[in-house]
Structure formats: C-alpha cells, structure tokens
Length: 439
Image 1 (cartoon, rainbow, N blue to C red):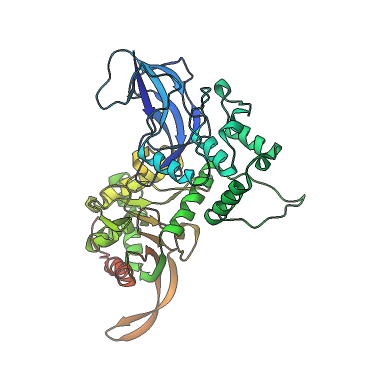
Image 2: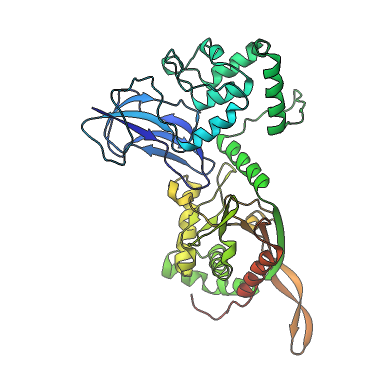
C-alpha cells in the first residue's frame, strides 16, 4: 500500500489560499479517480478538489472553515500499488503523527511568526494535530503549545477548532500566564502590523448582519490591493452615438443569425483589447523590483452575483476574437457567473480588468486594481447629453450619446502619460465606429 498526499491545487496567480467549506468524504470512504473530495472557496469562486488517484481516505488534515495555503496537504489517501513520479507519496514507514513536508510558502510564514512568539508545530508530542488557522490564532494571542494541549477539542478525533480556541480566549485570562516581556513584544508587533478599528456602539434597534465568507475575502483582497499599488485615475468622455445607432440597426439581425444578444459590453471589450495591443506595457504585472510583460491579453470582466458580491471571469486571448466570438464569450461567462457555474480556470490568469459601473446607473467610478494586474477600466452609463458639434459650416448644439471612462492604474509602473494615452486611444477607436459596417 502507498499513501498519497492530496494537496490544495493552484487556482490562479493571485489566489494564495482557500477556505474549506465542506468535506464530501469521511475517513474510511472509498474514492474514485477524479471524484470530488472536498469543497473549497476563494474570494473569486467556489470549487471542488478532485482526487488524482483512486483509493481510501485515511486522514483529513484540515477542518471545515480552516484557511489552507496553496500547496498544503489537505488529506491522505491510501492506494494500492505504485503511483506516478509526479504524485506526492508519504513513506509508509513514517509514523502517522510525523509532520508532512512543508512547502516554501508555509516556511516563510512560520519564519515570520517566529519573531512574535514560540512556534507551534502542526502536531504535538501527544500526536494531536493543530490546523494552521488554530496555530495562527494561538500565536497572535500568545497561547503556548502547553495551553493548547489543555483545550478540549470538539472536532474530529478531539481536534481543537477555531470555535474551541476562541471560546478559550474569551473565557480565560491566559495572558496573565505570559511573561511581561512576551506580552510587551506581542503588543508592539500587533500594534505595528494590524489596523485598529474604531469602537462602534450598537443599540437595541440596530440589526447585526454577519459578513458572508466571500464578502470577507473580497474585502481583504481590496484592502491588500490599495496597500500594494499606488492608485491614480484618468478620466475621459467618449461620444458613442455611432455605436448606439449601429447596435440599434443590427441587433435583431445579429440575434437571428448568431443566436446571441448583442450588448454594448462585447463592443467595448473588443475595442479595449485592440487598445492594449497598442500599449502592451498596460498588460503587465509587478513582482518585487521586476516587471512581467504578459504574452496574452486576457480580459477580466467584473460580473455582479445575485447576493451582491462580484466575480471576475476571464476572456482568454481576447485580442484574437472577432465581435461574434467576443459576444459569445461575454454572454456565456456572464450567464454562468450568475448561476455559480464557473470553473476555476475561468477566473484565472486575467491580465487587465473591465468593470461596468454604468450598469447600475453610475456616471463614473474609481475602481480598485485587481492584483496582480496594474490597471482596471470602469465604463460609465451611456447618457443623452447636449454637445457642441463641429461641422464645416460652423458649430451647433445637438443631442449626443456619451459616456465617461475611468482608468485606475498603478503609478509605481504606469505613469500619467501612458495611463492617459491609453484611454485617449480607446476614445479614438470607439468614436471612429462606422455606422454602415457589417458585423
């Protein structure tokens, strides 16, 4: 018999962790090849983790609601015979309580935690397993391994859960057992590394609403982006009268011929992809002191979910699609986003994001960059406005269809000239639309 480590798979370059939402198998259950073992959730999408082998589930290393790093082993499956060289296998001669090999990301995290308090290993001398979430809470709160051992666990096989350790913190004054120097150090580090909130008073008439899991993850992602990138915005007004007239003229024939509803979104997305080709230094990512120039143009399309949250499906190789192909991709991804039917790879590898704030009636917005990208475009509402029209016979006032476009970009690597020229070129492409062209 061999033992196979089921790891949390990579789910996109901007996704470093996921939350366990449900185990679909119990210890002792048989598992088929490619059968889903556990449900996970990120700030982008909910998904299943399938098994790469067939066998029997013999060990579960994380509990429901635990936060798991990409590459962490989440379960152990016993299989018959040998496995491929690419699979991760535990030596059968190892003790069950022996700690699995830790990946480089976890090593760096634990090294940072060492500066705050004494590190707590995954498994104690008694063989009791502690999840990363429980260990992080313990180290933040100054709880030692000896104190952890005294906590009654309500999880499987008596494991300490998040609920157990929070109850322990609430019901006991464990901080008095620590030395004064340790408490002082912890407080100093926590003061410098965490953001203290202003106390909020709650009266009897207020309603307390728990943030959703996805809401919490999105909130963290947005705060991290603001702290990472130096956000700056450029705005421009675009006359889309010709596009409005053209769409009104062809949308019925387009639906009849292609079986797709023609909205403004694919028209704008196609123009944006063309503009990115002219300014490839918008299509980059930052890694420390280096810039990664992306080979493909993958457009993220922010879509609203029924619960009010957002998700960003990605149109891969958007610059290679004609209008029919772009319309098909936009409609398909938008429809499946609304029904939570997106696959993990369909929200990965975006290189530039577009959000349509005009869909909610907003004239313009200042969107937050979707890390690790360096720019995001907000499309405002299309409005009928009076405008000065220049002709060979002079200027006159007429009614035109116009919209504002807001361009947020990372000023660390994108200067105002590039950010401004990008939307100026987009304006030129859209305003030169031929009303008489075919699709």
